[in-house]
Image 1 (spheres, rainbow, N blue to C red):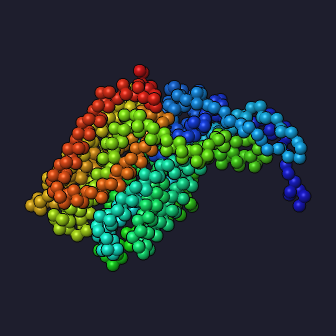
Image 2 (spheres, rainbow, N blue to C red; image 1 turned 180 degrees about the horizontal axis):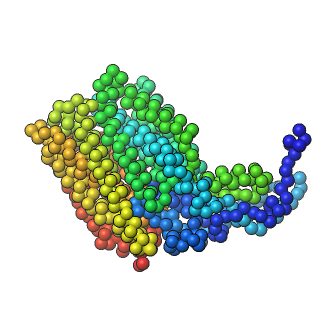
Image 3 (cartoon, rainbow, N blue to C red; image 1 turned 90 degrees about the horizontal axis):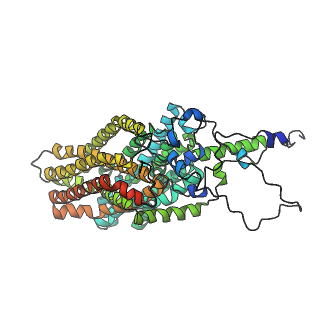
Length: 585
């Protein structure tokens, strides 16, 4: 028993002569300012990965100027390091008074070289590094993450099919019942302020578990609600918790895939974001008309959420490199009884409250001061709002004009789904051409390279709106004709979103997360308002003229914002306080 409980004291050689080595010599890669940058949405999440894994070995000289760029994914990793690896470094501020050490003893001397005890990856081939995991493992993790995202976005629209039943059950107007869908989407606006900071401090896995479990609980509460107030409140919080995968999944994909394949992974993620609202009305319509009733439009998302929670708990590995290194440091501390061993994440003197406050103020500040962000946010908010406006328009056309039942009336939305698939295939096809152009420019991306596809996508989207309105207002035209308009709107939708997201990332680099957070908050609030007036708009203006109005607004936006940025984007970037210019100017 005495031998078992005997403490193993570290020798001098354990502590001083042979400290753990890192794969680089840079003593400061995780400043406090870096930790305050929100990992909110999706494509920019190499930021902190690059801080903890700076591949600057001599045989990796091909990564010119410490810049690692992606084709259709995040391009911020080594670029951000090149900009602020040194100037943003600030030591932690010591407290003015310290508690006594105990037993009257003096404080021990400080470690002379704390960076010698800094845990890091061994190099570009370290098996601990998520991008070096096996293809099968990354595919399995990606499938789980995609399912969590699909569960959330599916619930954002499946409940819309039960609006009439809810209005009848609680004896309220249809507009009040529609508010249940709007409140859910409004909950998405609160997500970046919560889940982004949590993912920075605790990694990807824990926020997704908490988010999906909370989403499932509140969806269950919606299903069993006895009064309208409970239903509305629970729908809002279901959206808040359900926004977790929308904020974190793209970040996890950035952890798992390198810059040459990340664009494809992000395109798949975007498909899940749009696929949920498009297939939900079709499924929800059949549920409401069956013996199950409207409550099962909440039970089924809850079941999906519980399933996603269990899959995440048992099969999802942590993919955030700083948290992986912190776990590694903890294991080494206990195994070697050397308490000086640590990871950079453990040095960060940043709390969750400070992160949330900063992540609220900086996006708001950038939204007001940066015309690039403001214009892109207006455009994407309009496009994203139309995604939920389609639910009312397709219902008015295929149920109102063509007399289809609620379930069958959702089938034409699959035209948009096919358009999404076509757009994703196009982006995969052009991935190689972008890489070639990137290599020819020494690996430095020019943000304006992203804009020509946006113009094409905007033209397709606008054309689809006109097509849908002027072929769907009368039953004398076969229903397949307005259905085919979805090929244009779906393709344009995905191209616009992916390319403009990448444009913001390439432009703002280390502040891309805040730019995308501002965009996500505004986009969700605008989308939440569209279901409240879209039904009345199509009823009062007529399907053809309401669609014409939307198509004209879309045409004006696509011929102003992307085109103007093509001509003056570089000039605006040079005047920006947040956008570093690295394209030779």
